[in-house]
Image (cartoon, rainbow, N blue to C red; front, side, top):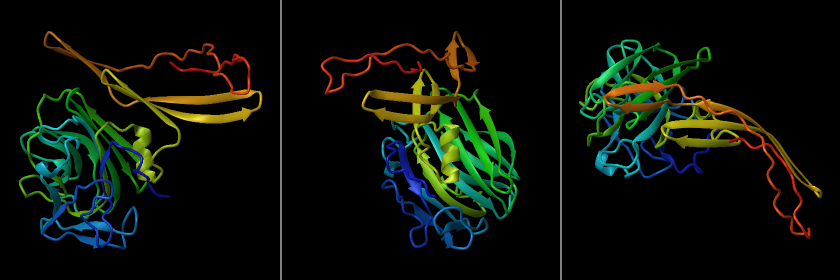
Length: 310
């Protein structure tokens, strides 16, 4: 199975790190610059037929200048996208020291995720936060980092392939900032030090907050998830996984949906200098009759009812 990002306009970049095309963006025009010669590994990978091999001692990484990024790329300086999700596969050859993974890292206006001495960290405007999630060498991890610069929160969802465990961490008390005009990088901090040591594969960037369902779909190769509906208002994003069936006959149309909601953010209110984070519960389901659309061969509309979730 393979992911299909072609129909999602919020997907701004996809680097698959295939042999002979390590710097190619398969979704957009964000061609990377390879620094110090990262190489392809065709024997150990998670997607396609190759992964990118990085040596910490050789400071191998990829970059693209902020000026080269499109205006709606997440966290571009002066850009329009102030929400975003970074996803990628990483396997550490060692976990010594700081190792930059994805983003603008350890600079003024930084935003991204890195690893330090065996623990994943979030980076935010030159500040940092330990997630408490362990990083072990020799194991593939699917790392997803979600950030919202307006609601001042970031979180990670990390899948460990060796045993299928999922780990999460969220921080909702960051200070405000605007992204700086620094390079976007994969595999190092923005000071050209603290490089990643290991393998990277299928790094994909969105300018919205992905749901857990979508993130899990990416790492399992089933993106986009079947039948999904998204609601985003007031800082709250929810996803409804739609299951059920559609049945059509000459008498009319019957539709049954089974909906499972998932909240992926919090609503924050800041008044008088006091910030409060609320866990947002979705409203109860309501069912009410809705007229059925007129069928062409009928002389008058027939009334139908079906479940509607509000």
